[in-house]
Image (tube, helix red, strand yellow):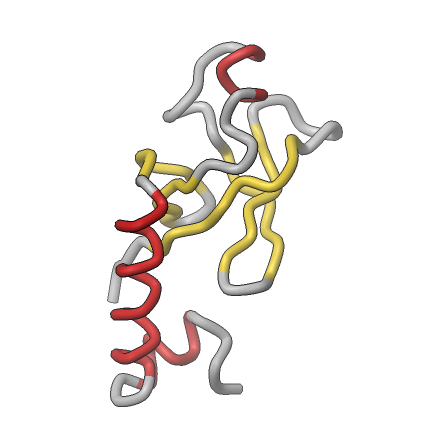
Length: 92
């Protein structure tokens, strides 16, 4: 299954240019943000914003309402779909 998951950018990754720390369901992951912000000022402006993350890349920006709604739907899916539950870290 290939899905993207909303995450909130919480900090820039100072060790790798073009990456940021993104909170995805309470877990911080290093994510490439070059597809949603090309320059340093644009990347810095993303802190606190939501993005759709897929295989380590921020694919697009999301507004907070859309992000939270998507997370809720994914969590509901995780209750019945084991792959989604594993992806969200709900199951071992």
